[in-house]
Image (cartoon, rainbow, N blue to C red; front, side):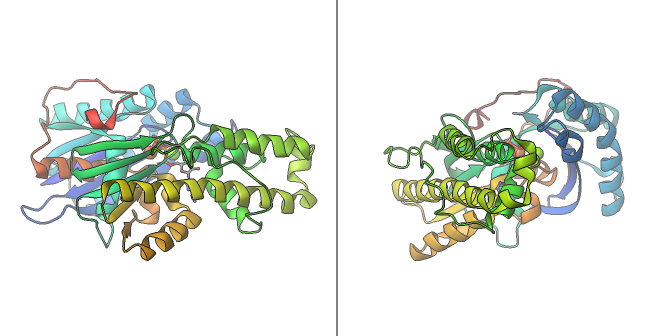
Length: 352
Ligand code: ATP
Ligand code: MG
Ligand code: FE
């Protein structure tokens, strides 16, 4: 069976084809992605209306491309999966609209997928896929959650951020430092030139005794350091060559603070559940320092760590097609032939 997946929840349009054999794991046949980062960069963040319009322009050509690459045609598709939520309402409606239109035209079933389930299951497309059960550390632009995962559709929330997400902490700190959007990769690149102990930054809720996170204070602390250096909102000074070493130190310190909290809370979740496996998913999972420190800490404790392939950490269509395929395989999916445009901009994963 063949699953077509469409992702359009935020600022990347992703389309993919996954094959689901009668036995064995789902296999990625082809996938294509268009990132809107260049378009939104001028505004320092995602502009929802522009995002929706661009999804409209991209989604059909991308679908044609993945079909051509896999040597398949639309009538070969058995299930059409799309991101139902959470995300930007207008952006979600584009993917849902195209999926529903295809479903009606081809008389094929539809399945709306939870975007975070896509992130969470994306490591199953890697060369070294995990086995259930595991602890999942979901670290993306909009979410920071620790979950106990016992199978497809069995997600128990262990803890989550009470304010900003980890990716948001990277992005907002980077923006204050005058780095381009999205800041995470830029901040982490600059951090390689700096010292992580140069600035003292808070590790919020490290000793809170639960598995929740808080990152809003970090952004405030970064801001305070920039005020002290007379750099806040001074675009010219931030871009000046002589400022770079200081910014590199601040970037390294901010990254170290975020990563330390993520690693320690993941270890606490492993201890609390007694599990010996952790899966990292979401855009921040591409962060090199996080991977290094988590790998080291887990190796010492005999814990296996699984990541998505680097290019599947951020949003993509492959994870949406895969999540649909795994739901179908588990007998959890109830594909519908009714084209219902009920996207869910806010949607709790444990309710999915
Ligand atoms: P959500 O999945 O919660 O709806 P999203 O889809 O916007 O949010 P993702 O696409 O999973 O999030 O990830 C994007 C985030 O990952 C951004 O905040 C980006 O800065 C961050 N990110 C990507 N690469 C890195 C990196 N190497 N280091 C740190 N952060 C990174
Ligand atoms: Mg994105
Ligand atoms: Fe995402």
